[in-house]
Image (cartoon, rainbow, N blue to C red; front, side, top):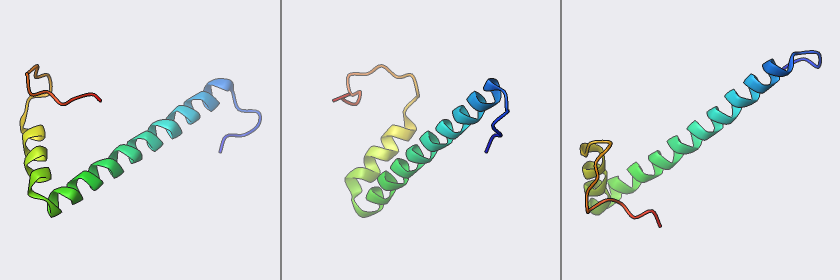
Length: 67
């Protein structure tokens, strides 16, 4: 924790670090859940393989729906 008399910049940096850490953990949990579904179902495994094998900035007609 930060002390009461800490500067505002220190408090903002600490809060930013905490929020980023929470976001990172959420993303890790989501990815772990998807990977576990891939172990149970072959379709999820194929989707994960095609997702991770594709280039990051790929514009294709088969792009995932944002719905």
